[in-house]
Image 1: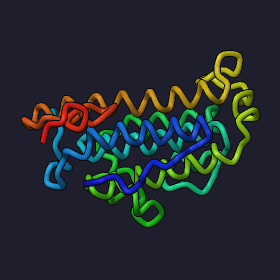
Image 2: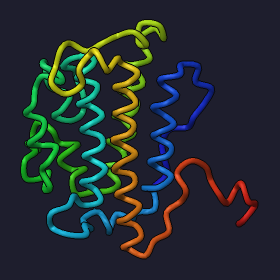
Image 3: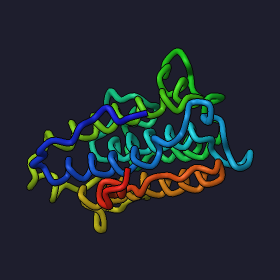
Image 4: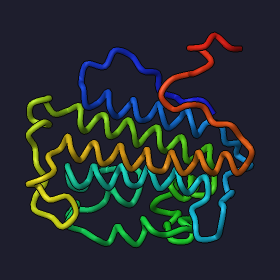
Length: 203
């Protein structure tokens, strides 16, 4: 499945970081077929679709920590308390997300929990929402903004750019997990940071 987002000239450094991570994620994860949505190395791990959905939900968690509750696409956008609300840990640790998501209220993440195609569409839209929220702030305001006092990312150590780095690092962590899944399925995922075949001139 190809990414629906085409990188243009993005002047905002922080928005560019979001879309760079989006591109890296797609370059690896696009190797999975819809038929592999339910694959997991063991019952104690997320499925392929579940890994992708988990990434999208945690992007919305980090956004809610910075911006408060907003009209997002997953349950973790819906927290007035941001990083002070620790209830997110239960859903973040849930291995069978389709069993805990309300299909009436959260139809898209519910479908994404069992479908690579739907999970990647959701990831694209969550990425766009992150770019919209962060891009609405001036570079200076974003660079100096801090979350309220909280037990997760204390403001004395984490300004908004630091939170963005943690958010992107979390996405990269699960991208790495999906590389392992791909190898277990005897697939050869692309290098995330550039198209190696284009660089080497291979077909």
